[in-house]
Image (cartoon, rainbow, N blue to C red; front, side, top):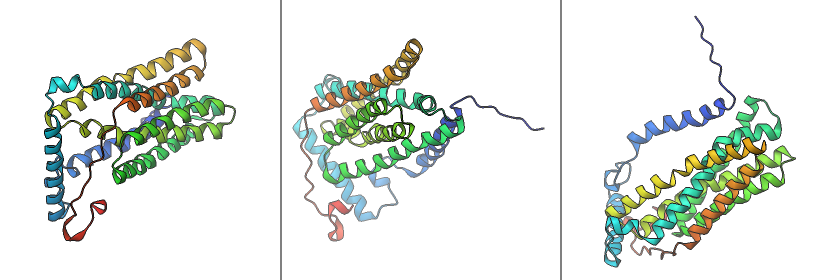
Length: 275
């Protein structure tokens, strides 16, 4: 007996995005390690060097100021990062959940074609998270990389409204938006641990993540509410663009931390940049 499965509009896009994440999530559990000394795929000398450098960095932060958990929650930078994450997550989820519907309405394409088109922005986002993360690690700079990506997301969403009469330009604008929506992550999550360490850092990351993720409800709800009232995605996309820009301004208000200078050399004469 053959059982047919009929998927609602947009479900194919969600499945195409979700299935790889589930597969890679299972692989990650067995491949990634919690600590550098557990990384058997690194040579022994590199594991020892990396563990030593992280311990030196930890001791330097503790010497500068050791925050208790409750003190960390009151930390000005943590509050700013929590708010920034809320607004950015609003944009990420608001755009991600409604993008297939927006593309279909702008282009008039079929569900299958819309699903394939929706993969293009996420491909751009995948490339950006790798490139921006690599450059942030190479330079040791986090804040400006994060702000750049957030502004790129805001710009891409705004451009999609300006070019709404041309489906190809709308999709191109969405690609720019996804460059920012994915590319901000490496720099952003390096910021809390640049001035906190130990339990305080872990608790602060949890605070930012838990409160900030409330934006995952706010973004899609507001876009849907505006669309229901106006029968147009224009207002919703404007909100998402403004939300990303607010997030960039909040990160801009975070005091820049000094780049950690690594003067040690890797074993066997290799430089730190080649690790």
